[in-house]
Length: 230
Image 1 (cartoon, one colour):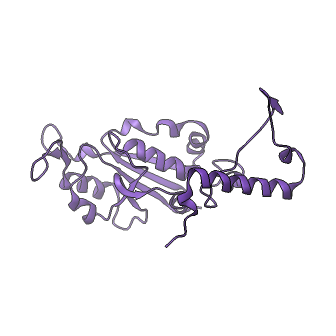
Image 2 (cartoon, rainbow, N blue to C red; image 1 turned 45 degrees about the vertical axis):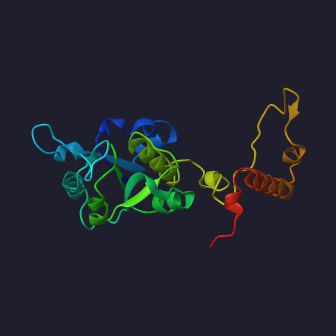
Image 3 (tube, one colour; image 1 turned 120 degrees about the horizontal axis):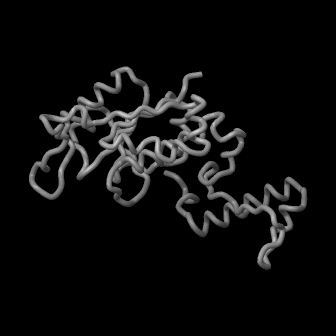
C-alpha cells in the first residue's frame, strides 16, 4: 500500500512537524505510516534578499505573495501528474470537514500551501489549481497552524496510526452528530456517578443511550448538523 505523503510549502519549514512529531502521529511518522516533506517558498524568492511578496495592486495595507514566486515553488515541488489535492489554507476557503479528512487520508496524500501576509496573488490559485480550505471563521497569522490542523485530521485516520480501526467510528461528525459523553473510573466522583445504563452490560441499551445523548448534544450545540441538506 502506498504511504500517505504530505508536502508543505511554507515560508517557515521549521514549524513542521511540530506537534505532529509527537504522540500517535509522531510514532506513525517514525514507523513510516506517513511521510512529511517541507518546501521553503523563499528558495524561489527574487534577488539578493529572496523577496517573495509585493504591495497589493490597487493599494491597501500589507503585502501579497507573488504569483511567479509561489508558482515556481509549486512547480519545483509538485510534478504536473502528482495526483494529490493542492490545498491552500485560507480563511475564505471551504470549511474543513471530517468527510474531507477521511477522503484525503484514504488517498495518496496532500500538498498544502501556507499563505502569509494579506494572502497570495489570485492568479496562482487558478493557474495551479489550488483548492482553498479554511479551518474556521477567524484569521490566523499564516497558514501553518491551519495546515497542522488539516494534517492531524488526516493522519490520525491512516490505518495503524490510532491503533484499533474502530477508534474513530463514534467520534464527533463521523455520523453527522457530536460525540456522546464519555465516562471512566472512578464510578463516583465529587457526588456525581457514571450513568447506570453504561454499567448495565446491556449493549443494546448502551448503544441506544449513546445515540440519544449524541442527538441531544447536537440539537443543543450544533443544530446546523441536523438541518436538512440541499
